[in-house]
Length: 82
Image (cartoon, rainbow, N blue to C red):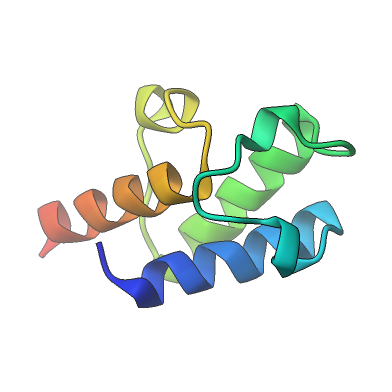
């Protein structure tokens, strides 16, 4: 996983959740954060897919809890598409 992917995923998460990037640590559990609900997470995933022009598998997305895990799934999907 590249730092660039994690940085982009974090920026998107901040924009979609309204939380500052400073609290969106790579290993923080998104599902446990105040103000983060399933709709915000789905909007975040949709924006990530548009940003990278990829389609993430539902089982991969729903199996993630942290930004680092999301970034890993994005990286894996990008590598598979290459």
